[in-house]
Image 1 (cartoon, rainbow, N blue to C red):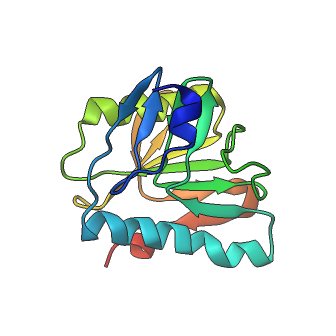
Image 2 (cartoon, one colour; image 1 turned 135 degrees about the vertical axis):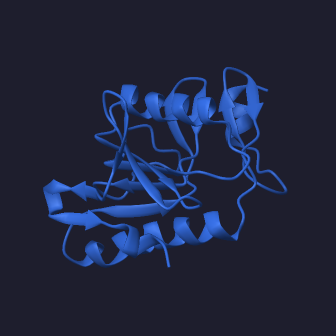
Length: 159
């Protein structure tokens, strides 16, 4: 499939990612994953009234020609100007699913960093853990956005 064909394709079930002519299936989210995803996005919603940030759930982003990913949550520093954003968001958040392969998730996090995303976060809703991707992947007690004085804690995501 060409990149243009992919960009014009909608899938009948779960959206898929794209890498160099290959369509990549994503893990099927369950209610635990979905709830963490919704709460992470909802956390940023009220900030839209006082800042320029723009949170999105499951939005395709173009990291380069031939590579399109779908972060669970993206937070842009302003509303994307294109339907398929090709500039890095301020934050990408991946949320683990039970059937995710860790090496694939880790690779995706590194792609976001290489693309220039300043804040790359991973949420494990099953073990209730938070991770920040920097020089490596580090477990953290909370996820912070110092530019806006914001802190996302386990209490914000897990009940």
